[in-house]
Image (tube, rainbow, N blue to C red; front, side, top):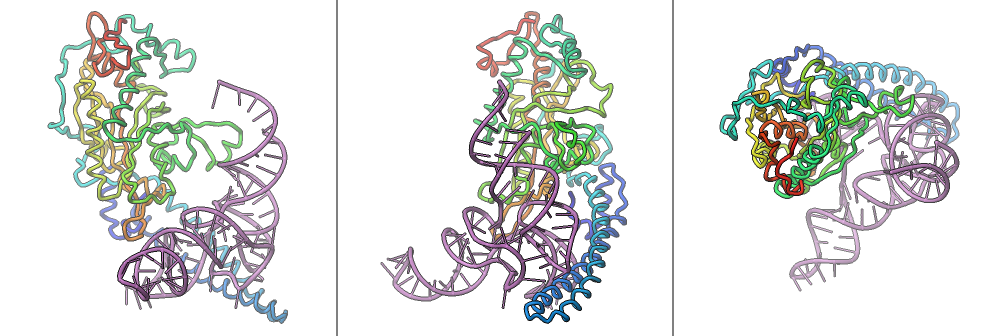
Length: 433
RNA sequence: GGAGAGGUGGCCGAGUGGUUUAAGGCGCACGCCUGGAACGCGUGUAUAGUAGCAAUACUAUCGAGGGUUCGAAUCCCUCUCUCUCCGCCA
């Protein structure tokens, strides 16, 4: 959600920054709605004041038992009531219109975000490139000979549908080991607090982190009773990322400055309808309706979020470095960023089967954009309340990490187990397919 | 799922239609007192918004949303969450 004050102060700049994100807006409409809303509010408040004053007098008159005078006043207030409810309705309409517009607008890009319409304008942070890539094409993970015994899409299709998978035996173990390893690293080395959060969240939480209202089609809704469908504000959703459960911890709270920064990490399943991705990455485990991910969330005061953003990037990098997977870091362009982000780094891991870098982690600073929607605030030293900054990043996606290992650690004997994972896999050194 | 009890400021807690502009207490801040502290005394202490250069004034908010009324923390309806008992359940 945007600070209406900022739009008011410099509407042209706001429109220009939205344009960088590929969003055309009618900023005049916003300004007009805002100013008529405020005019109406002033009027309403004056009428309410008048009503309150008269009602007080009625109470006094009745106490004195001058009933004639009281009735006269009651009639007077009666007229006010009509005007008040009419104005209230008018304001509701204006406000809903304005809210609908504002809730649908993405966060503004930071000054150093490259301007461009899509991923081709992303910029690599060359200093961050890590590892030697294998430029000989290997088998893609789903092409590995006889892997279907351990990675079973066929059964999943029959039991669940497309874009699901069964992992079996040592491959299931590998995924579990990855989760354990990542959680240990983030809690012990990186100072995050481990959370086991709910996977089902309410409507307000989804609005808070901005999956709603715009991306409803990408979500799985949970329906228990018929009236779950009827009451729009009472719906429940499967989380598309633990970002939702973790960030909403501070929703409608005033956090003590002394407790900041908050750093949470969680390993959860994530659920995505992938409505807009029909036909993309249809083979293999790259894009599933359900996948596991370790998610990092930091909550900071505004002055420290840039620093925290870089720190979070390094925390995610640590995982790939320890797994010895080659990767590069991209600074996303204004057109490629997620809705809530003001600045995003992507970690792309080298997939020798595709001979391409693929996204394995996305690390975003959302500034106060989500905090405004969530009413997540903190008290600064001078007893003023201010909006927090929220950041989130994958640290990292388990399924894609697993694929990266299958493709980068292929040998004729099987899949070598990365050293850091061995202790989580009963010292297994090779997965024989 | 059934029955019952509840949700009031940072916290505890009073309040069942009109000086409640939410009593009182705890906590916190400042001042007085003190050699210094405790005790005591005094003052202050919610959030959001509208108008205003500002001081300030006003409006809204007692779980959420509707309703009744000249007037609602208080009465009515719906939803939601918490607690107790029963049922079911990993």
